Structure formats: structure tokens, C-alpha cells
Image (cartoon, rainbow, N blue to C red; front, side, top):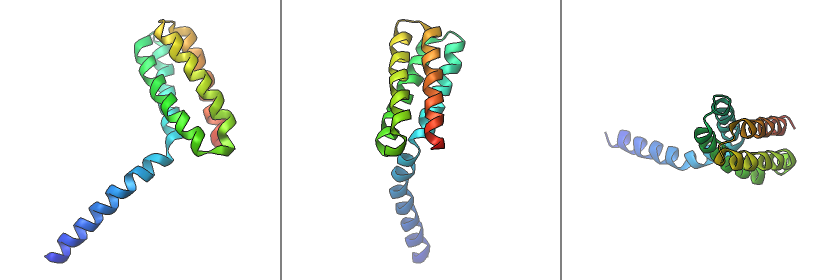
Length: 114
């Protein structure tokens, strides 16, 4: 019984310690996912929801930009477009914000191919 408890405790500790590493490695995927959601909501005219997803995408895009130096150029462009999308979403210009999110998505996808 002691071995089961010890094994469970060690497994839980290993999982707990590895979760931040796994989350840290997937910033590009998170940025793409949130940008895609922002685009979908923008196309439906939901500027406030677009804003939330664009802000989340921006956070992950910046983290990815720092993490992947070789992909930095495309992620830097996506960050610029996401910042523009956020500005326009705050002004409730869903169509313009959607265009910027779309451009950000293009650059994010290009960063994963290099």
C-alpha cells in the first residue's frame, strides 16, 4: 500500500511540474486558436468577444515571439496586427478588426512553417 501511495505522489508531482513546461511550448498554437476565434466572432459582428480573443492571442503571440527567435519576424507582424485589431475592436469596428486578425493569422501560420 505504501508503494502505491508513493507512486501516486511521485506521479502527481511529476505531472504538476511538467504542466508549465507543456503550456510554455504551445504559445503559437494558443495564439492561432484565439485569433481564429476572434476572426469568427468579428465576422459575426461581435466586437467585444473579438476583443477578448484578440487580447488573449496577443499575449500568446508575444510569448511565442520571445520563445522562437527564428520565427520572430512573422510573430512580430502578427503582434502588430493583433494590436490594431484590439484598437479597432474597442472602437467597435468589427470588420476592420477582423481584417487585422486575419493578417495576424497568416503570419502566425507562416511562423510555424519555417
